Length: 339
Image 1 (tube, rainbow, N blue to C red):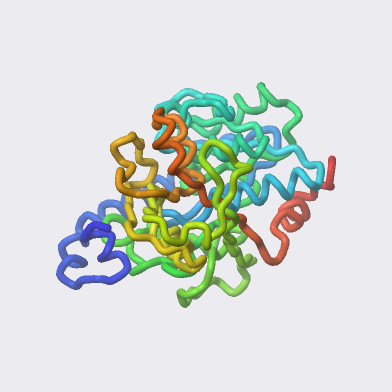
Image 2: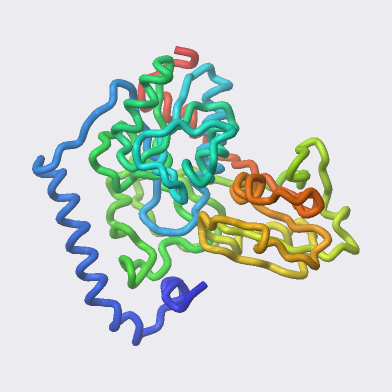
């Protein structure tokens, strides 16, 4: 974590003053953009099916991808056909592009590959309106679109806004970029439909009328990169030189999860979110390297040496929500199960 990111959660007075002018400029530009859509100077476009945005007002990993995966599983169990649109961060696709299980993460990004692996149709693209139209052209059976991120993509009209917060870090120092982690002021939460809080710890002062959901991430068994049927428990790593590798928005959560499972990790390697991994990133002296599911989709394509691949183990996580978010979304949208 660099100095500025540290400042977001452990503020330094001198840095607050130094970054204040840039924060003011960012706030002005963001406010002007919101106002342009509010006053109709810029137009939002509506898709022919309901759209629910799963986003956040702060930068960094908050757990949107496991949340979206849990929603896809829940809607599938209810017979609701759902598609996903995403910017595809880390990928090069600008024009709408369908992400399939075997797509190149360098083109479509890492998170869309995880969502596609769940069986849902996924389309990535810079313009989420165009991505949504492309998705419906390819999959006209889709009844509901989830926008993975895009809370600030106001050109896409939405029926529901669900903001995700990290329960441990909260909103940091409460300031806007680059003086803090916020893309929009905390007051923006007053206009969303619901907030999902991932974990606990921070003292979050949320609007009283806001529907709130608690999300818990539970780790599963580690599985081999090349064979998900080969699994290991925490005790199976005892006596091995273990490294943990993460290129996600909040790698410390991943490292803490491993520690909580009882895995003795000798080396913790953090990379920027959406890092394009190569073989050189894998420590040669480790007997086992444990990675996140998001990083695994890129490492599976980046590593060609069989011995190196055999040392990689993937830790999946499962999101649990209380109360049930799928039922709440269907009720708000007046949609029936399987219709």
